[in-house]
Amino acid sequence: MNLVILFVISSLFLNSLFLGVEPAIANSQIIVMGFVYCDICSNNSFSRHSYFLPDAEVRIDCKFKAISRKTVEQISISVNRTTNKHGVYRLEIPSVDGIKCAEDSAVVSSCKASLTWTSSSSCNIPGYTTTSDQIAIKSKQANLCIYSLNALNFRPSKRDITLCGT
Image (cartoon, rainbow, N blue to C red; front, side, top):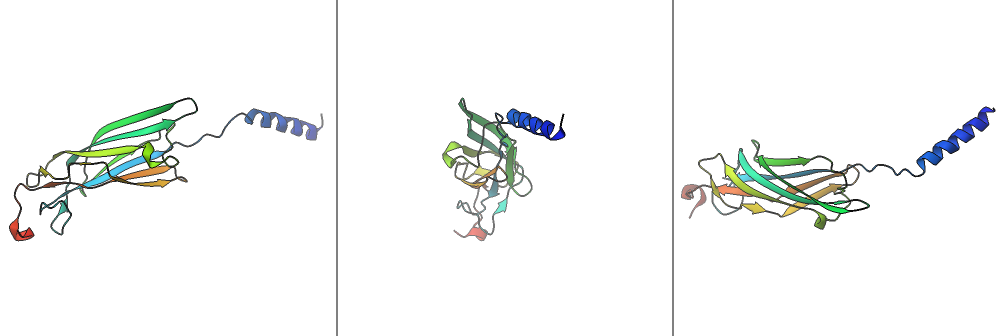
């Protein structure tokens, strides 16, 4: 058999095998993050006397809509995270089949963070305790979505008048 004919026949055979196969779509990686600070002046804003709180526990609740050809499903995730030495909490959600966060609109997903506890004895009265306000950063090329939630805070039981005034 001629090599050219063999090559043409094998090429046609291989092409027919792959015609019905769709390329795999890489699943999204999702990161949810935010920070917790001590509001020394008890005014619900970060001032020059405020500082980030390590070891504060935050409850994160997220819902994502998964879309496939046959169904639409909702995936819910609820976890507790502890802030690091910079007051940052972070949840990394590995790829989940059907979730394409970088392609979907902001309405499709939602996350909320709530304060649960702090190890600080000097700054342990909850201020902003829950947030669902977020900034979503999406990269279609990397298939990555970052949800940055608004800051949460604790405050001291007594306001320091020498630092903050009356």
